[in-house]
Length: 95
Image (cartoon, rainbow, N blue to C red; front, side):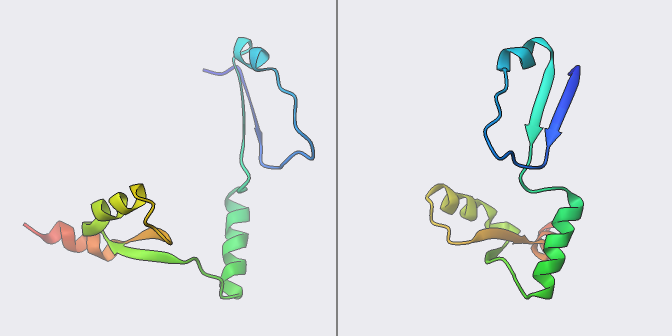
């Protein structure tokens, strides 16, 4: 689809001037990320593990995912939701 793609995983020290018209006419794509790739993510996870750093999450069973969504819409969430995958297995066993 695109004639050329450019990707940056580093931040610039100053704003970049990019011609949107030039991107469109040339069928070019420009994208970026501030989170890094797989190696950087693994390095961060290793560091957190070595230093006992953990995320604050609210673990919910899959059966309460709709309730969690409603709370999210109402901005009634203190931590990120994490679905307990064991509850998915028990949901699938029901007939």
